[in-house]
Image (cartoon, rainbow, N blue to C red; front, side, top):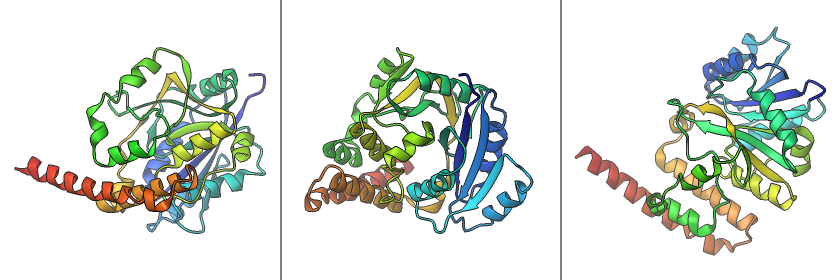
Length: 292
């Protein structure tokens, strides 16, 4: 890198302002890059926005804005992307606020890796849990309709979900389809060329939609298996929605994906509601057995 890259970090905040502040304290320690931070408060119903605004009122490195409504993950991030459209920045890092970074040159190394990739779109490090153990969701293929149905009724739990990841880890940086949205970087211009996020979902399925858009553009997503970050077990979603409501949102997003992007008839895709019904029965039956 001849010039020091400018990275704008977009952090979507909903309620958990203390996590956001903790994460910003870490991201500011990154070396060999110029870091600019944009907090998008997604219309938190507590006093998150006021607290964050007051915390960073005199901080030239951090900006705090508030979305016009809580339109979900894609809407909130797009609100931040549009704000950055005319700002000077080279890359955009899309990040959750429940992240732990232990490497002070993680962002610098990500940029070096990005520049080596062929036709890159999104690039992520490997995701670890708080015990520094590999999480199985660091990358995955765009799911088929059948895989979505099997997933709802827990049938996919019987296979070795980590097998593919173990093979991937034999290489340094590999092209993959889906990357988690918890911590991923992309060139600013590439993000806008792809058309930002699809706001047709409230939560879930953003990763597969982005992966499909990347694939259709002739670009590639990459996972760097030598770099990592820690993703804490966030309670934001579980605190905001109970299990059934989370599953309803998930099924709606999957139906939206298969109808819009795979062009399946909606009456056929609605079979996923049956999967949800079976999911709820199995879930609560399992909980009852555990209590016995």
